[in-house]
Amino acid sequence: MTVWITRVPPARPKPGPLHGLTMAIKDNIDLAGVPTTAADPRSTTPAVANAFVVERLIEAGAVALGKTNLDQYATGLVGTRSPYGACHSVFSEQHISGGSSAGSAVAVASGEVDFALGTDTAGSGRVPAAFNGIVGIKPSKGLVSTSGVIPACRSLDCVSVFARTVSTARRAFEVMAVYDPADPYSRKLPRPAASTGTPLIGVPDRPLGMDPLHERAWAEAVDRAAELGVVVPVDVSVLLETADLLYSGPWLAERWLAFGDKLDDDPAVDPTVRSIVRRGAELTAAETFAGFDRLASLTRRAEPLWTRIDALLLPVTESHPTLAEVAADPVGVNSRMGRFTNMVNLLDLCAVAFPGPARDDGLPFGVQLLAPAGHDELVIDLAAAWCGEPVSSQAPAADEVLLAVAGAHLSGQPLNHDLVLRGARLAFESRMARDYRMFLVDGPVPRPGVTRTLTPGDGPGVEVEVWALPSAELTGFLATVLAPLAIGPVELIDGRQVLGFVCTADAADPSREITTFGSWRTYQATPSLH
Image 1 (cartoon, rainbow, N blue to C red):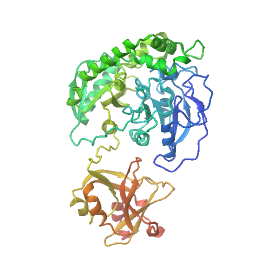
Image 2 (cartoon, helix red, strand yellow):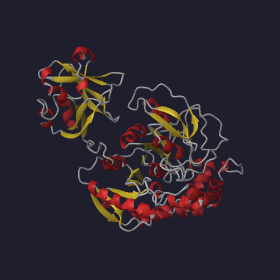
Image 3 (spheres, one colour):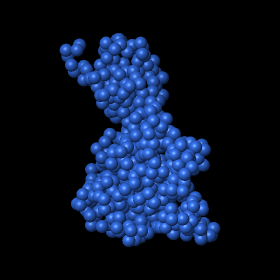
């Protein structure tokens, strides 16, 4: 199969939170100097600049390895509608990879890159994740810029990210999620503080009509959801009804507007893509507004759902088709692939797909969590908890700042009371990025200082506690910090930036380095060193 359309030699990575991570880019997203084909070989003009999101990632240290195959013009959920060849799941040569972001998902699942960019209009950032056993984050609309992306359905398009772990996908997502004033669809969304209570996870209150292997895996997934929160049965019929609207409403006209002029009778154009999108040319303005009215009605009917639950758990697909099944019924099979995904952008939701219980035949089974726009961190955190990875739901409230401590302010250490008496709370434990070094420094109590270098170390990173400190207390706390230490921005192992203790370079005495211990507590527990 053809995973890559264009390979490029790796550039020297820039310093940053993604330093050295390799990425693939779906070939409807611009990479400077490389044609953006959207899987149409007739597109041969190199892009003059990087897409906004690609530029962000490269500046953060990611290294692009090339452009990946897709369902032509991002129209499809199967991964077979490309003149460059069909992609298959990494689990089976007979089963589809899912699309349209087929090549990006396979490049990640096969280990060729650390993460990859896709796009998700109808589910293309989630279906390929499900069929390849990886993670796919579909951000809220407008949270990630689409400047430099060939549109499929511009009002709904989202740039998505694939990775093998939630943590890696999150690191890329945090770099990507920046307002772009040049993109008219970019928007600044409030990002609510994470709930401290037990999450309420909605699940459909009736059978979903999946194939038997999917049904058995789904039953296990519902049981797993009960370990993460309170499972609330809900009626999802309005969501499924909305999903049907995507390819029967005016959004086909938007696809025709985006690339209808490319759909001539040239054999380079996939005939299924041509037949689907050409219908958009026939829609009238009256039919378009009727579709918008219909969506407004469905959206209003769906609103009460989110007063009962924090997130909704759904399967990503109802089955895992073979390549032969798609060849026999390309439109019908594809339509069924979007049954649980098509409505997400129409209803302005965010989503993350991740591996659920494997099917009895060994093929992967993907599930997804949905929530209203702006609640991206909530669903990512729940996915991380499901996958046994660290979560960041201990995010600060609007009137708090996060402060990483590595020494005398840790729980149980002599200066911890300076935090506790100011109303700080322990939010979570983490590690600093691997290019920080820890040294013994002088002071009234034993303590370490941490300094950043340009060369990542071999260890796991310095262990820290991250405390949420009331913002009003920050100035008073700063007055207690004695030289050679200071408070400044530090980077955690997952790429997030918080405030933290750093020491001046002149206090970083190489003869007093203790980085190899990994934590201040481990150093203290080695009596022979004191």
